Amino acid sequence: MKQVCCRDLGNDCDFTVSGEIDEVMDAVARHAKEFHKIDVTPEVAEAVKGVMKDV
Ligand SMILES: [Zn+2]
Image (cartoon, rainbow, N blue to C red; front, side, top):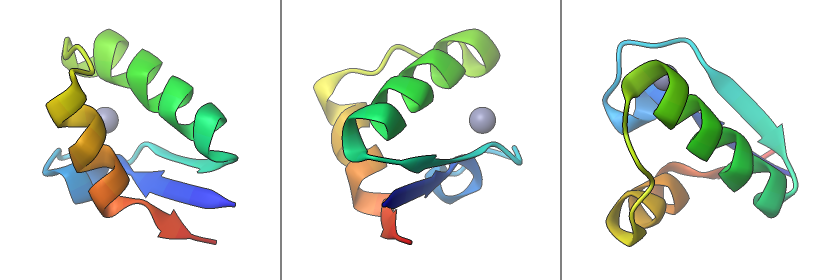
């Protein structure tokens, strides 16, 4: 499984998600939109993948 911590993206935020990569990317996209008003552009998606950990 993969895990992404929103804090690792430079946000002061405790959101963490883990799961299969597609689930993680979906959850991050929803979270970014709802809580940070950020659209997941290709650049943002790359940053998310950059902080993604194997768990
Ligand atoms: Zn967040």
